[in-house]
Length: 308
Image 1: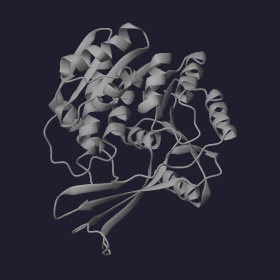
Image 2: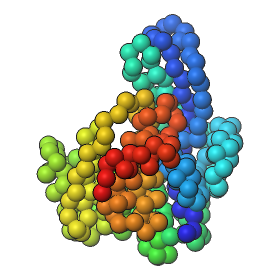
Image 3: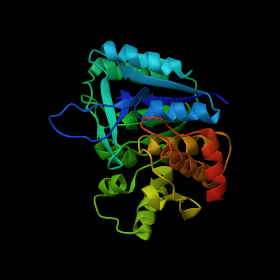
Image 4: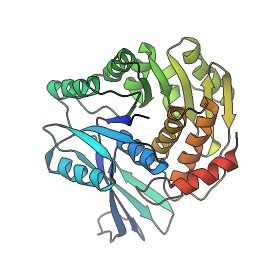
């Protein structure tokens, strides 16, 4: 199997730590600090590597923090290609408050991508011989909303399958354009994409199936947090629940789901079987603290619990 290419236009250096209490004005003394390479596609590549699949992370990064990101990705043993940009790569930070069990997440908007930098990303993807492309994460400032639709066209031209995980105008525009194999919105993201409330599982499933029926996308996997997930395909709608677990951090759960399901599809499993792996990976991610992601052993155990 060829390495799965992941694309991250707005990556980050992800820091995490713990504190007894988070208070304004006062210095907050932290412990258990760690730093990880982050951003949707990079997280997906990390989980793919954990599951045993080959992955190559393509991302746009710049400044001193871009070099730090390269180091962190390389330390994880992940092949990568950095598209240089003028602005600094963002730094995100997560603080877990031990006294309350709450998690505080600080996520900057990120850099401004210039026209030539966007063109360089497209050229890099066009030149790759791949079967799977995972485009994941927000579009940075300066990137047109139709950018992921252009990626869909590139994937179609080379016979590759595109997996998309984004939100807002980027999600709505790409769904309207079509050419996506798998899209993974959350409940809230799907509501924004269709422009109306989706109050229950039936409404969510119907909205997801409308995209499948219109042949805009082959598979729509809607994540519902601790309530499980819904899969819409040409075979119909499936809803499955997840085991209730102790949540240590929600960071990267959606990215882990995308990686798990992509791994299943790329290794020849049916959409439903791949869906279960995605759910297992997403659930396994919340078992780990801070910016750490899912563990292979947890994914295997939870996959068995969720069942076919």
